[in-house]
Length: 313
Length: 98
Length: 101
Image (cartoon, rainbow over all chains, first blue to last red; front, side, top):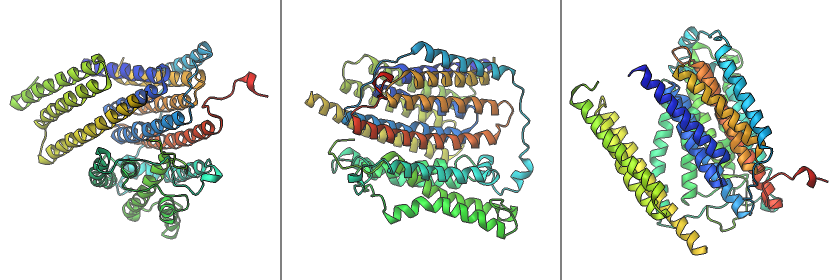
């Protein structure tokens, strides 16, 4: 393909992304804003694929557009039921536009003037990491601290979200209550999708060691399977304190932490993987983390315990 | 430049697919209510996606890539059909209430 | 201008749009959308910077994936706060300066 066509395609993508983002910010109606935001996320995933960042493309597609989209749509429904959809016209438009435009201008200036940073050479550490996908190696080996703390941040967000439940509703199941007609399209869909989603999610984690994929992308697909199963009435939303769910939430960070400590015993340091153990330890941590990511993300979307109110979803 | 029959088939089939997408989008914008819009969108886009999948299939290296393309089409069909039903039911319920 | 610059400038534009949405709207759910636009615009800018040399640098990619996940967790917490506020007060906007006492 010629370079001119590439530039044209990038210009088209940039324009489409900015247009959908503008519609999400300034368009009329909350529902419409949410729908444009989801479209925006999917376009962004395509751009990440164009940049050759396939792992990010998957993450943006499943988390940025998919899960965040479901989260915002459910929030819109909850605000509708609470009669709180009032969307007053924007105020202080000029000041806000000036603030936004000046940050954009500063970044444009930075892009064209700042020098290329020194690149860290990953060839030698990659050879000792036991995996082929450099993104997986960075996430679970070279910068394992970041990822360990990230998995704990997810858990902390879930605990914080549960704290927002009303006292009277603390024993109620999580979420607004999902209703699907028995034998209706949604319950059929809920039976067809989970097997495929399960295989795809696990495959993404397994393939993530050497190709595109990984614990976060695979875990999010599994989270989607859990959500579809709940929405289709196949699985019940748990209550706070359900032991099996708690175990699933803590399993990933727990295995990560124990593996990190075990590395001290075998001659590395905390979370420093010696080359001879790197591959099995990385894969073990990823597998455990996937389960916890799936359950945590699904429960973050479902929300705090709530008395069933008979409203649809 | 296209080389060989496979490339020509890809270009023709993808082109047909795009025409269906265009028709579906025009329907989405021009049709008056939710139900006719859904009709335009699901039928035209599913067919369009089918043609694009067929077109891309001519570029596949082996049968596993063909199987993946087929799976993508099947899943998109399933999701589009389900969502269309759900949107239509929500719209019916809203009309009944208002 | 290269395609890469187009995408980086798109990212810069998204950050500006997001800041506008974050500051100008009273409806809190719109602010969550604005916050997410700032985040994803920043990721695009950062990712384009990491793609200036081939092959694409994996370190920014790993950091961006971490960022996407954390942004989702923050959004979920924000949405729960907004819902709690709406259920308690019947509105999802912050009180005006003049209404505070």
